[in-house]
Length: 143
Image 1 (cartoon, rainbow, N blue to C red):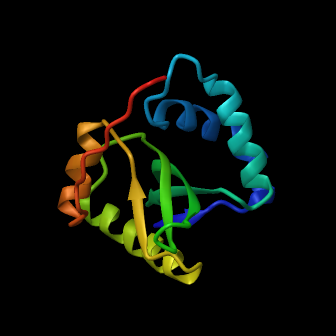
Image 2 (cartoon, rainbow, N blue to C red; image 1 turned 90 degrees about the vertical axis):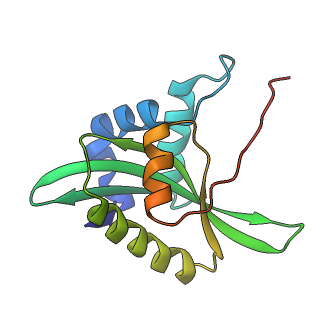
């Protein structure tokens, strides 16, 4: 079951969430202070601008992810971006399926047309393929 963490409870779970954020963030430039990014996420989550989700089943925590809604002014569309995803253990495909169904309902409820994520992690790409996500290459260059 995927559960959105209530903003007032984030501090209670912060040590666990912080670890998952730092380990599950997309690859970043060496110029980026991941501790500062984690604090930014904490502040934004407490303000309700970022959501922190926990995926669990039968008393076991499988994963923590963060999402943020974005708006593309050019296309006029909204997307829910999975900003970070950290798995604690091998997660059954059925549990991922249920999680992304929950996330899809949530995304639609806030006006998003899709769910997107950027990753260079093969396990995440494998899960996405099993869940029928479109896999699109993303390129970046540090400046």
